[in-house]
Image: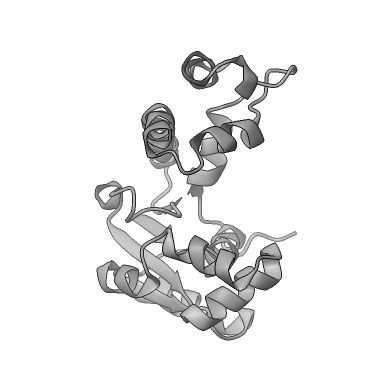
Length: 203
């Protein structure tokens, strides 16, 4: 079974992803792949250089994320140009990793995709889990975790689909408003319900 794991900023998706990893389930991590495809020497970073200029590449060949961020911030046209370069490469690598896991005999693969709905990637997976919190908790955690003002936190939250919309489109909801243990218990219950075999990886 291919399971999509998603959530929104500060909802706790990364915490649940780590729990799934602890249970020995293979993870295809979209954020990790987004970093992988722009490593020095890749065709993607060269295309970014050609599109946005040498200033977005540092002397050691790595991406100057700050400079690139300045260029695309508030500029929809440039943001779309960057997405047009990045997204196909990320999707190709995600599918490659998924197929590699299945070929090696894995029965279940978790595709950890933060913007699963925003990027319209539902077709990549068979079932979707959304990790959710109340808007109040989301805002509070975002302010505490990232040192943001209330306005900055709300702006980040509003840049993504509301969690309430994601919940409606999902096959399962993990309520992450309580303790880590409560979330873990919900996860284990869901894995059993979906008949997914797992075993904890010993340290």
